Image (cartoon, rainbow, N blue to C red; front, top):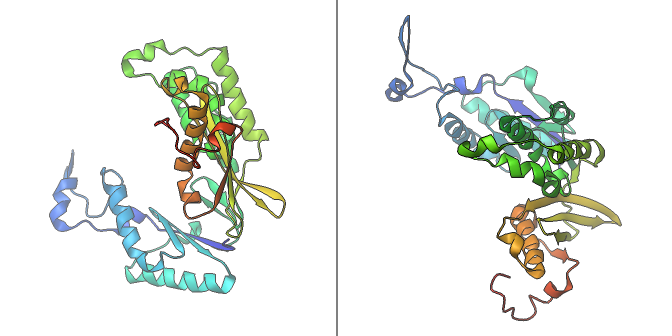
Length: 307
């Protein structure tokens, strides 16, 4: 794993990119004082984030092996301090070549853990930030469809840390997927309140961190299925210690709920492998299931096309 991290932040990142003269009329707006056009990239245009991200990828192309870019945030990862200093020099040279300016007050250099997109990342683990969890815990019990979707959106961002998330959140999901012409059917009941508090409780009691994979050890995927959902956990056994890497769960559709038990158990494996594909590709994976009939499906022909 990486031992040292740096986070670089561009100063008013969008405004450091000039808009070609021919394209400036497309940004025009009218106010009482007259007609104005943007000369630099603004926050408003629909394609601004994509254009900015594409440009930043091009700027940092020479540093892709150790550099990760998300808009105006640049994360540099290294395995040793000396290597990190060299990586920083290369990153600074790439930015200076394009005359890009950093915001020194928001930069962090050569630290052993860094906050990235609401996660605290260290050399071995990743966890939600305390502020992000507290913001979710501070949300009041929803009373409208909009508030319900806000809560689900916030907590679902960290679902990979929570086992059985979909099963617990299923009652809330059922009333949140209402179209505009059916939103009048929204009704918050005791069942939804219990699910709301159960999810909050998990954020305060569960071990909310995951490990990064260790190259020298195989992966293990334990899956299961119920009548309403599938789920699984990807983990490693590292010198007798279990390292959880990723939790996944998914609510079954009305059609999937009619599947036979072997079909649901096979579907659980499929869902997990699809969601965790970036972690399992190119690695040895041992699958653990409590349903023996599917253990031999790779050894002999299966007449069930769905499986």
